[in-house]
Length: 263
Ligand code: PXP
Image (tube, rainbow, N blue to C red; front, side, top):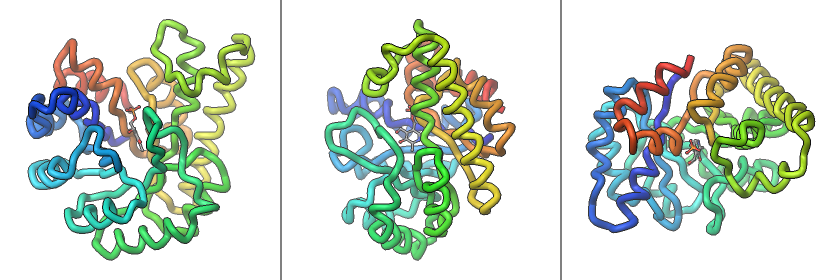
């Protein structure tokens, strides 16, 4: 699979002091040297980590393709159209969320999303949709005529974390899982894995390229690899776990360790 490395969390550290450090441009060559094959960034409406000048600089200086996650906010779509990253991944965005909490609601926002896809495509930008792994979202993505879909792996990752209780958890999902027995969690993990697998198989049969991302880490990637192998998932985008690991081993090594795990 292609390994896309999401570097937003390096910018989180910089924004904590607004000191310019760490310098995101320094990260680009380290990701490449570690074997990363794509730089992923999310320009959020609140600019809590990546800011407009990062987008410009990263697109200018990255030798790797740049995958920009963005909402359908007019200003951000205009900016993307001007800067023209390799790919735009449309994601849902809520102001108070800690991170992207679910996939796009394509049914209710079909025409609004379609109009933005048209703008991005007219600017020669590949378009991906970040969706929950289900039949309806895949079919609607096909109808929207995008190049890629990225399946939200958050449910899979959270159930996995719950079953391996020494691992970090993402609080907002865990509430639903807290009172389940081990057996129930195992069944849920099987279901979440099947949802990813079936959605990817359907996506491929409809000629959508399929990626996955959110909450993937050095532990759950091994199980995710099996899902990906069975269903031809071509790419993962991984951020928080790699940046967290880089604090201890350096960014190049953290990326390399993940590169060695991802099939
Ligand atoms: N893919 C998408 C579409 C995302 O929104 C995110 C989070 O920004 C990621 C991948 C990376 O998720 P994580 O930081 O949990 O690895």
